Length: 323
Image (cartoon, rainbow, N blue to C red; front, side, top):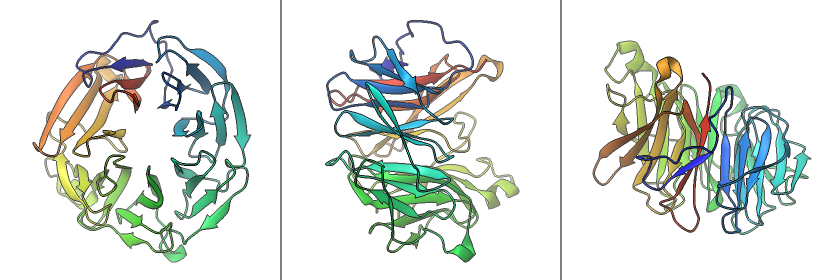
């Protein structure tokens, strides 16, 4: 783990050189000042001094484990295989998942024991009001049983658990504003879209970003290869492409998307690889200027981003070492 104060132009060196193979898939800031949690492979780590030093809490079941912060100095650890755990700076509590596959987890900012998950088969939402110990299905699946698609991601509005954007194969994204009681197909991405990742801005719920692959454009051999970052200003009802892949910008399937915590016009997304010692590009998209700037570092990948609650200029970075 490391941090930057200038959007990645300079990155504080880690206290030790990373050794392969390590993925820091989750890093979150908790309620208490300077308290962080991070997942390094299966190890849950905690810091009480804003990331200067870390201690190991224990092992969490799963692989490629992400973290979602919740009120009450806690977080929920999850992976796509349906492994769920309640984690704190001092404890790990395995939970029973309501689904065999999970593509997204959302938490209630007012109640730390209220959370929802999206099933990775149909997009069915499940609700828990007791910290993940018991679950109830809410609403309808995102796709009817006779129209099942591969589901890649579910982005929960951090201010409203009823607002969810689910990304799938071929038909792009679907969105609900009433907890899954009704769903609508997002417009503006075109036909034959794979929506691999999405995020709802914590600063403005009407702003949603997504990464999509336009299969028709890919088959036609257009310069972008059909790879775009999309932006919506109506909560995900309609998207417009705002960033295209080109010689200076690489957009892979399912990139990490991090919306700025206070500025809905700014999105960070990442491309990194150990191939040929390339390192990582942190891209900053500014919708007001319609501009992408790039900051490069030598780590194989930045696999998670969190922002300091007290100073949004401080970005905590979870890094990976593959080579």
